[in-house]
Length: 251
Image 1 (cartoon, rainbow, N blue to C red):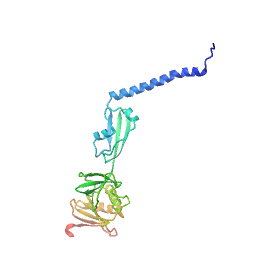
Image 2: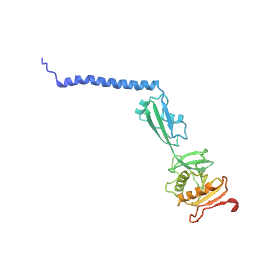
Image 3: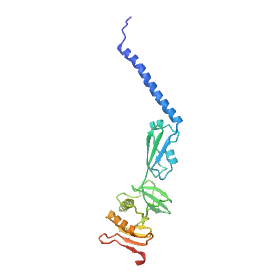
Image 4: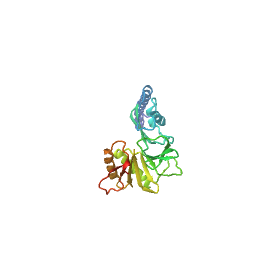
C-alpha cells in the first residue's frame, strides 16, 4: 500500500477549517444583527414631507420601530405612490444599523386653476397633481382659462404653450422676489395681456418679456406702498422713465 498522500488532498484538508471559521463568523454576525434589531428600537426620521404625515410615509415604505433594517435593506422595495399624487419620489438613507432617514420629494405646485367649484393643482411639468378644495395661501390662483376635462397625472398644458411658460416664469419670479401674488389673470383671447393681483393692487405686466426687470420694479414700488393700498401699477411699457402707482380713486 502506498504511503504517498496527494498534495491536492492536503490542500483540501487545510481549507476545510478555514471555511468552517468563515461560516461561523458570518453566522455570528447575522445572529448579532438579528438580536440587535430585536432588542433595539429604530430611530426613524422623515424629511421633506409637507402634505402627508410621518405615519403615512412610514406606512408607504413599510418601516416601523421594530422593522429589521438589515433585512429591509437587502430586499428590493417598490413603493405604490398612485394614491399619493403629491409625492415625486422617496429615498431611504441608512445612517446606522438602527437609524434610518426617509427622504420625501414632493411635487412642486406652481398654481391653482378654478374648475367647477374646486381647484386643479398645476405642477411644474404642466401636469395636474390634484383636484381639491384646499389651497395654500402662498400659491397664486390662475383666472381666465377654460378646460373641457382633465385627468389627474396627465398634462394639462404643452410645455411650449405661451400660457404654461408664463405661469412657470411668474411662479419662479414670485419665489425669487418674495412677493405674494394672489391671482394671475389671463385674457383668454390674448394670453400676452397678463394682470397680477396683489391684495387690492392690479399689476399690468403685459407678456413675460423682460419679466425679471418687471418684477424688480414691482418689488420696489410695492415696498414703498402702505398696507391695504388700492390701485394699479402699469408695467406694460418699460420704456417709461417712472413706474408709478395709480390709486383707484384717481382713475
